[in-house]
Image (tube, rainbow, N blue to C red; front, side):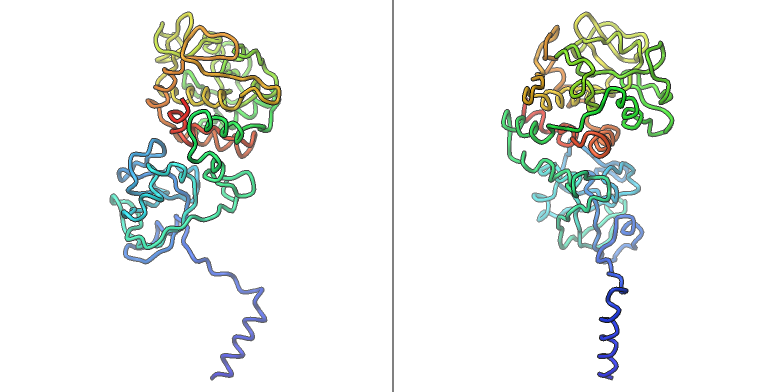
Amino acid sequence: MRKSIICLISLLLLLGGCVSEVKSFLEVGEGIGTPNGTKVTVEGYIVGVPTAIDYVEQSNFSSDYALALADDPSETDVSNMLFVKLDSGYRSEFGLQTNPDKFGEIIRVDGTRDDYFNHEGVESITSITLETDSGDDGDSGDGGETIGDYYRSAEGLTGSTLKEELHTIIDDHAELSYDQVWDALRHTDEDPTNSNHVLLLYTGDSISKYKNGGLVDEWNREHVWAKSHGDFGTSMGAGTDIHHLRPTDVSVNSTRGNLDFDNGGNLHSEAPDTYYDSDSWEPRDEVKGDVARMIFYMAVRYEGDSGELDLEVVDSVGTSGPSLGKLSTLKKWHESDPVDAFERNRNEIIFTDYQGNRNPFIDHPEYVKQIW
């Protein structure tokens, strides 16, 4: 018997290159299909905080009591998520209200497969460990760097020091030509329900990707930070930075012109719930936060070094030069219209496929209050 075992071991050693490594964990999809009561080890991306059977907070996190995991870092479909109940011993380290930088990280969880909020979940946790992103899932564009890694040097900073460090992180992005912006926007602003269309920022209309140009009812490239506020035109850099370029209806874009952002004015006849007057523009509620976060991005990305402009967001309207307002209003818009899945997806595409940099205020909404 002993001789037989020795022979078997020898054979396995000889065939070592042919023996497949046994995976030591379940992916989230596999965990969802595992029966309740089973001891499991599950690995997945942290994609939010579950607060109901069919709702997961993906920004402005309200608690540290649970996490939602998914196999895709940009997942928004709750049916593809596994809920993890965090007992008190894990909340201070992994809860998203306390640790919003953990959003997008990969963790490995040991526990018991059991429903949470009557949704597929894991409870009775015995260990949670952070894992290294392999870089194969679209969450990284630089040798496996996770979102948490991307902002690591900014941890613990506030005020001007935080603003300076974020500038260093997102600076020196890959620049597009103005012609390349057309195709980029067809990708970043694709209608999730119709892959042949883009969604227009101010009207919310879904329109053919190729109905672009300068004619009435076509779409064009809107500089949310108006290009005259800094006189950068359409030059590579600020003029082609797609973090603030969005598809908009030609005539609506013309009306907005270079107005600052603030509440009030006359209702626009083509853009629902959009108001304007001689010195300000108020977009519909659904994109107020989007606009604010684009403006905050520009004020951090362009700080006057390397011959670039120093763009500043100020608390007034009727501005000129490299300034844009109104800061207090934009901060309220940022709070009233939290980051959504469309913004996150857009941010990820720009980072992975085009510029190699991110909008920090989409990934970390709390940075707005910490800087301004």
